[in-house]
Length: 383
Image 1 (tube, rainbow, N blue to C red):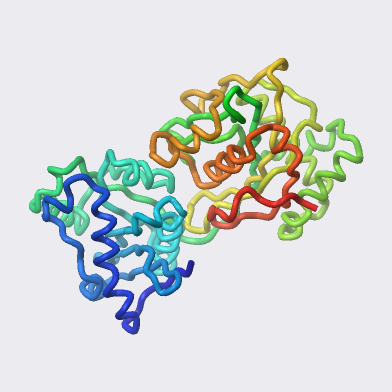
Image 2 (image 1 turned 60 degrees about the vertical axis):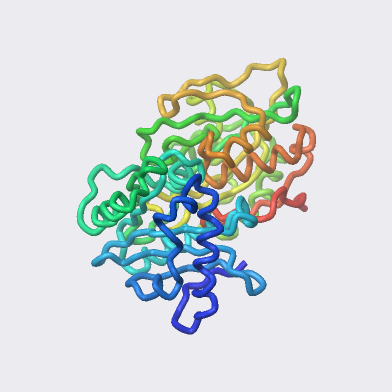
């Protein structure tokens, strides 16, 4: 798939946008039948100040995102993906591309208007950090009034959402997340926390226990009882990730990561384990568009039913508990459970693996997945 910011020379692609929008609109109950908000011709979209990003493959327009420049304010006016290509990450890629392009043009925030209660509308955008706007004024308010006048609100509650964009690209903060897993009666289960809506990062979504590294973790890491062969296994697993970081002492760095995971696990689940229980698993880096960025190292923690289990013990989440991985992933696709891309991809990967034994025997190759954009999963075994 190719993402392209369209120009005047892309007439054929522009001509396809209305058809893509019309097909996507059929997923919204009553919208096509009402005829109050017909698809906008691509040439008309292009004539407005702003830009259009299209997702293309094999000469076919899979989807597009249109951002209006409203007197210097950037507004995500439309995101449409062909229904037959839904749930393939195209919408996510378009939103990231639109936000990145807006950021490059000097935007400090981007807004949109959407249906509040459709799973692939407001709940979908919340996974990217969009939040309900407290105040609406100026050109965005003018757009809302046009919607109201057209009768669009009769099809469902509409809300304005906003996403702050980093005014400069900041370095990601090192963080660790631990994925407790166990075999359940219907397949592999994962322990997740459902974050509170008041959090400044990953609000209202399901996450694994974890958090950012703190200065004391390096000292705690140095004191870990870790056999040399276990540390060597970790160093090999994280080698490609560490190659892309400025790390003076790789052994101390890996020890600090393990210490962060153990500390966060104890604080958030009351579970205390030996350092050699953590299995290196993955690494994801938050996109440059975000005001808060994290470089997250993920560890697996295999647990058996007859040993102490994690419990809910954090004010950062409303509740925590075990969930069947396949059902949890299915709930994320309908919007019943919100997840950031890394969490959802890792849950999907574990559901596909099926058992704790299959997961722990994989020992996958770990590379830093940039910009929260998923690759092919499950990953191949490591070397």
